[in-house]
Image 1 (tube, one colour):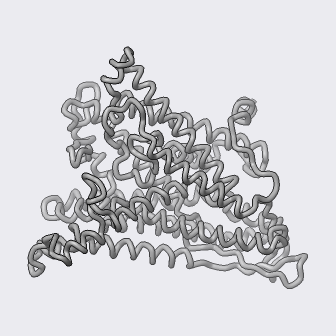
Image 2 (cartoon, helix red, strand yellow; image 1 turned 120 degrees about the vertical axis):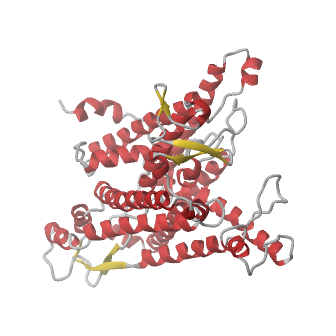
Image 3 (cartoon, rainbow, N blue to C red; image 1 turned 90 degrees about the horizontal axis):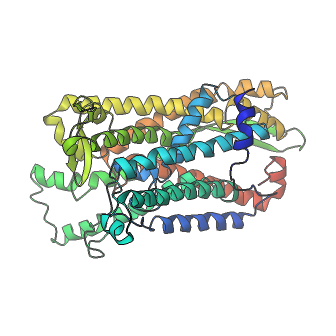
Length: 501
């Protein structure tokens, strides 16, 4: 008996959001999408009850990619969903699952397995956060007022973030089936856009401890309220470029917008004609970023989990400086220092595996430790370029975007390539000339852009990778909205191409 037959009774009965029967009108899709987005923003402002202070963000600079909110019920963000996807991508890429996603039963098993893995990841991530890492410290005062133990309060905190992890899972499923785009992409856009707006328009007069945004800072510079120092000296230039002036960050932000929009428009278009409708023609675009930027989320999430492991290990160490295992200090594995209230790796393997997120992290250190900086950049570049290419390949194959699956879709829609025999095998051979190569090149290119964007920095607290993901996902969302509007205006096109939702 195969594992599918054993697990099917459980996996096929996992709670799920039912699919719509027939076509969902575009306005209703927008309503569902907007409703889930409002709910997401609401939940990120629902603070965990029983928490002492705001705690320490275990994900640190990966927060913009993993979404959610520190100290809120959505503490875990999309982390469990993305980590579960990584496991499924690796298992599917190695062909260990033996599932045919075109078979409705296997598809149901796959979705149930994904949900089960998300639940497992909620426990594997949430338990260390609450019980071991002290990243979400329980309030002793509350335990005293309730007349219970501190452990009971910790269980209550874990229950809240577990519920938040399940809520974001089903919110993602609602958008995927009833809305526009994907929930994971929408949540990343929401978090990054919020931080980006704050980076441009933030004003310290609005709240205590708030920082001025780009425009407020430059208003202060032009009116003389902010002292820049002599612009004829290096300190004044550094202030404008890398300091509060953020000119380099502004340039990088605009450059990312331009590069991503241009890269999304670069494509190879394969001509198609309809076999049943005379004169009906179309084109199948093979974009440069064919696998989209979503595989990059998997790569960065893998790095986030590595750094999360390091922070968990050092939190158990005396003095929270050196990773200690079984009473033995292992400085070669990782040493940490406190920077702005957060533990950051300063040496060892975890330091070299930590991505660079701003010019301040590497430009000043070039004069004192250039070898360490170049090793760190090289490791991050290798990880992102090779990981981006590998996960792009897995993504294409497991989401039905490979040559074989795409050829079957084109065949079912009644389209064919002019000048070639009407056969899925023939179409597949034509697609094999482009899709595998473009997938690898696009995945590696996105990884290179992500590293470069991080090193140059961006406006606000947004990481370069987060901004890169946001621009690309927004562009694809715009294309999907335009396609939905076209289908609404011409229902015959939906029937021609087999769209049922």
